[in-house]
Image (tube, rainbow, N blue to C red; front, side, top):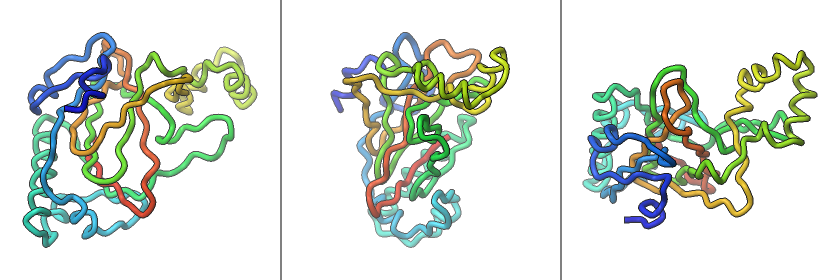
Length: 232
């Protein structure tokens, strides 16, 4: 088992899907990992899928139609099983073949794309589930090791100039444009890479949430390599 995971108070470790969905977030723990060492050739699946855009959602029909070797089929069976257990749980899993996400380059002093450390927000009680089967994997970071970007004085001042409206509407402006969801790592912060094959559940910001939402980011992709990611 990866000591980086098990020794980290932010991360709860489980050994089954049932434990993954039934373990409660508490204290500093806002990420739960079903730690798995998967067998199968996920690269073979990626090599046969067709990228239609920078992010292509792969249907189960397309996945099942691929002519795969025994190792490729073993990988496919794992993906199909993950999709089914998440769907049975009530989630809406999406299998994505990913070259890159869209970059936010509009403002030079703050980024609001998924490569920036951020939290997910929902009006209803939900969690984020994700598993990277191939390619670069996402990072999480303890909440104590980040600072909300809108509270950094120089960024806040620039946002106030950008807002150019009544002071009473400034906080609403920050939420409307998702500036409040993004975080800056503190010096000496220690992110944790989520690794390949593990199924993760991350806490989301919603009205009933009892813990701080999990701060995470998408990785910079490896050159010439697509990611295969299950997320919901």
